[in-house]
Length: 423
Image 1 (spheres, rainbow, N blue to C red):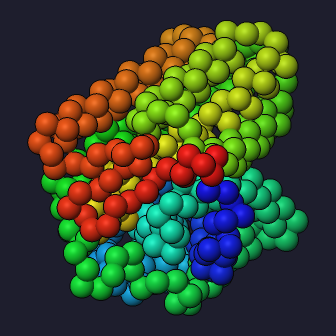
Image 2: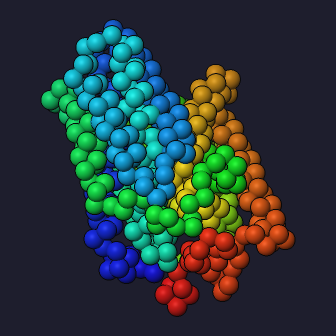
Image 3: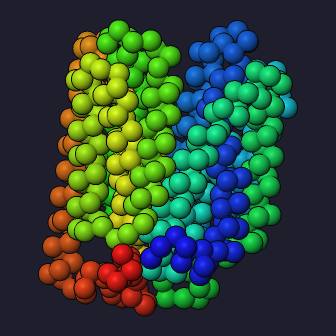
């Protein structure tokens, strides 16, 4: 199914969703840099800013699973609106009360990160609600393109406003955008399953643990990204290049990711989703290993661009795999747990990178990160393969007919692949 057909069948609903998603996600992309620039001229400067950014991320990691598992699949709108409204207040407080004690700023940052923590997962679930089942891969590709676009624009906008207007302006803008997203929710369905429908299996711990292989794979993919981003300046210095080259190289990675997300949604790809995910994670690992080993700037740039293309596919396959593993009523909670797992993987890899740089050169630290990623990726693949064997022998899971996955016991069959004739 092409993007043109996606927008022909669901264009108005997807456009409304995109507007709400941009308003809700732009503040998330702005926040880390915004809090650093907010306090850079205060005592403690950048160190205080790094602590506030870490507190914000911890809030996200805690809030996403804690609040996401409590959303009602059939009527999530009021809960989601409350979380976004409180998050907007947190951002607004950071901007308006920027001169208060750092401890209070930390409270505001934690609230800004935690309160809307369920929003990413819930919005993804709402996107699949307004999209025909056969167009879900294209819809998720569109979501990824939108997300990469937001993350490309947010740092430049944040730095420009903070440095040319005032340090607190980006946080007020972030609060305003998140507040605007609240009434926008009324343009979307009230939930992601029909009220009173049969697909409302609750997001219990037992249900969410079904999808542990997808969480492991998600943590693997972002852990390698953390290694590449955080060690790249040191790696460039090791190779004799200017540290300022890191910015353009990471921009190339982001552009590659946007291209990869677009290309993935153009057609159906061979192989099961877990197999695709493993191949893509291994491909990203190979590219990053090449970046660590090859001493030429052009090769490093090419490796990061290709890694970005493959990384986008890895993100999409893990989200589609999660959709196969969980019932519709638990999807938003599953996406929220995935969000937390990805954040934990990123934070853990960042800590590992800092520790490794004390004992090995930057290239060696990157290779250690590649090894960790490969182990996690293979573990996720084998975990999903074991689940597939259980489903096949027990008859409780879905099957495939002509490349189409059928979901038993969850209402109508769900088509996760484009028909062969539409490739």
